[in-house]
Image (cartoon, rainbow, N blue to C red; front, side):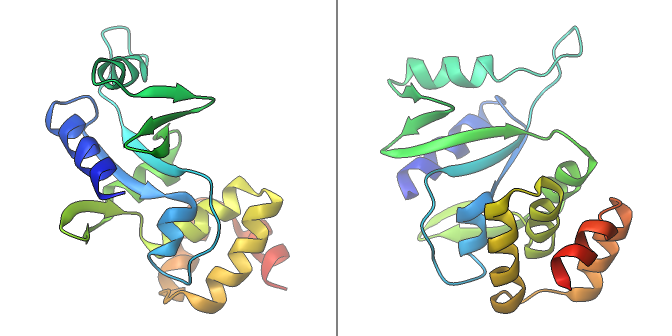
Length: 165
């Protein structure tokens, strides 16, 4: 995965996205015991186009030029399936802005904060997120006060009550 992150850092330096951070299952692994996950979810802030639309086209084009191939909704980068997820709502935008700078082995990267990962699980609301959420609350070191503020700010109180009672 370190080689994959080096490629992502290059893409960021080249301006194909202005910020990225690891989220999803791999992001959760930074805070709890590892579990099986299929791909590396990379949340990105994309530069706006002249028409105001956001597109992953330039990212995919740059990766194709480097010899990487698409597989379903992912791009295989150095043997790791990577799914790019543009910042699609205020919660994800805040999560990207507050992502934690860290290292994977010797390569710098960013990972979404544990509190934002939990809130995104709540917001997404899939069965696998509900299962992961319960484990995440039990195992990850979370700032519960901060998580509750995020839940309130993004109107996730109903699901929070459903999933925590």
